Image (cartoon, rainbow, N blue to C red; front, top):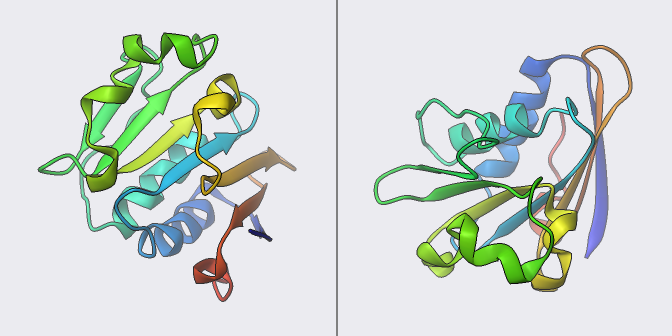
Length: 148
């Protein structure tokens, strides 16, 4: 796995970058998001959905724990903020979706790190200003030539 880093200057640029990444995702991929509150994880997921060809309104899964997009569900967006480890995954709907048929986008993934497979794509979003973000992706070569 290789690290790729991009800088964005607005939510629109963040969505545009995520859209390019989303277009390269495959069923079975897991995106493990890391970043503080307000880092742009849900905004990034909006771009992922667009890149996957989904026009659903993407919202934060904070209260629902999981939102599913597409028909059949193709993008499953989890919030693991209140989850304290893999033993609590049953309460989130993690096992309700056929992972091999979907892309999982997981906010607060560090809370379930022991449940994530080694090939998980790790995305770290860091606020560098009001609207500016540094986005680092740890993944394979299919993301190498993506620019902002």
